[in-house]
Length: 410
Image (tube, rainbow, N blue to C red; front, side):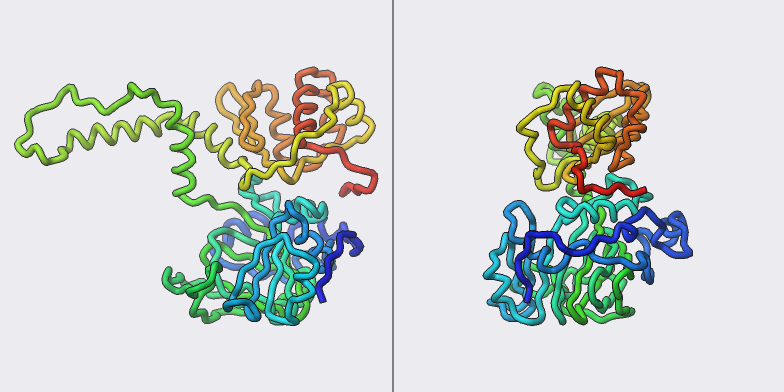
């Protein structure tokens, strides 16, 4: 029976998370060319010898925490079929769960389990701004979240037990959903292909492929997902960013108005004017670029750790960096940069920093690497602006120093 446990006791295999090519004989570029966003791929033993860095009871402990996003899906034994419950949960809730046909899901587990942050390093060939999170699911025998379709790319890594995955790449009818459930579960599903995945096996699924996973025994799956904002989200965010800067005096104008044969008609000349207004709003490519940098690095749920209660001074920050030898990027934060003409724009959690072109190395360094070695930064330590910026980012919890138990990858 699943029980709450806060203490991490499971063995950790760092070798399982070492940056490697998990695609066997395929190169990373071949995977991108032939499969990414195109068709599914099963990779047997993508991570040979993989062992889960968290056991089921520890996952239950996370699901009891207030700040952790967690869900329970009960196919049976709920008020209705496929009941969805949101955490945080109590230990008593786990004690009352049935023996079969349910699933526990914990989102953004890479924030709480450092080894899962390392796991994402195996997918660094995909642009970092596309990263979403690592979700962990636990299910007893027959546990599932039902047949469904996701609109994003995902790698499904088996960590414990066995799971049968069934897929169908055919387009899914929008009306093919079960009624009376919060979950978007398909009413009718037939499999074109199916496999049984064991620990270390991984299945890649592009957007729009219907899939159905069922636990064959006690089972844990790690889902490495990638963001795919909808056109509606992109347009809505850009308009929200643009409108406050438009002066009220900017209005539709028709100083060349002519008498119309049909006053009720919206003429081609009028429509051209409206098109020009819209095209003008989209003509500033630099503004669009910088908006997108801010937008795509914004926290999805506005969940950022609070700034540190005790701030370091720049001098104290430098001393601690030299003593520790490492700086770790926060898993709560998103980093990206844009190089444009005489500017380097750095984006962190929706905030924009306009850097000098000579700082392109720093932008590349902190956006490309989760772990920064002292030697990477050594030549900049006498630059006061550099120290002040990194100290401020540390004080606002964008970076952290490793504790004594942290073991860096070689």
